[in-house]
Length: 338
Image 1: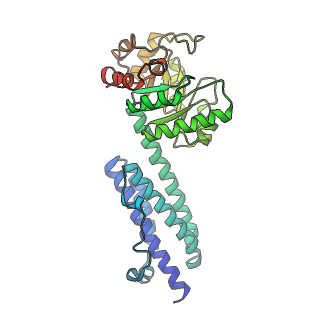
Image 2 (image 1 turned 135 degrees about the vertical axis):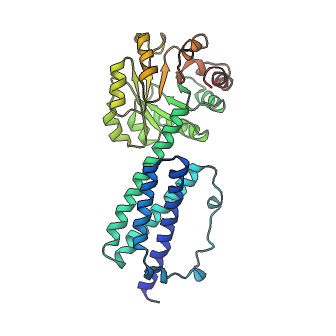
Image 3 (image 1 turned 90 degrees about the vertical axis):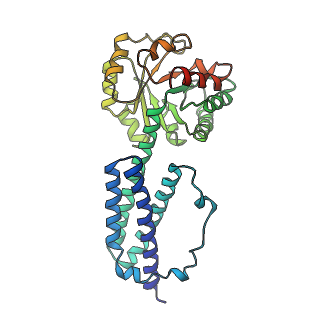
């Protein structure tokens, strides 16, 4: 059997694999998240692959004698959620495209270049799907916990996660970078274990290094534009705001969410004045992205703001200093943020 025939078999098998995988993704874009532009991207990729899948290549197929037909892995047999299903098929498509790019160079001089272009289109598609998934989770989240430096940090965070915490921001000032990264990585893994988002405070570099879901920046930190260039399009960027101008600027620059506050005086930032009540009204009526009220929110005043229309809150001491963080998180979700 000559090499040309074997190469044709490789190309045929991987064109099948790529087309099947991209169709799985397309169906979710179309019916699952109802994003027509992403479904169209998938369809365009499928059609381009189909143009290369010629009758000549199909003639080389020999499924009956393929030694790899019965090969499998336990992880291939079970998928726990849609995210795992999509990730598996994205990886399948990307791997197949790499094979097509390399072996295609031996079959047709234009193949390598064509499949390389498609491979990068799939990378962009993957980023879009990750960004959509994270943003959907961000929109649904009603409690955002910001850490404080306590000895039992991990147990408190896990307790709150068990209670339904959806977003955690790790913030600590007086710590070495090596320790900061170590703790951040463990917290990130813990959040992902409970399907919660993990956000780094300020440090875009650490967020990128540990594969955090995003970063939160203040008005005096790195700009949203530069943060986006560093962290990439699929990650979440949040920004603190205290007035309408800061809100509008954050939205214009591409923030995924904003913090609004301090609503009440807070010992965490005693130098900051509380926001004017008209700004809270402005955000409630005008903000087009998710936003979290923050600053001094406790069990005695949370109803005051939820009655005004606040649906997402960021807290620190209310959970971090609770006798039972799990029960406190459940209580907040059930009574104020359902």
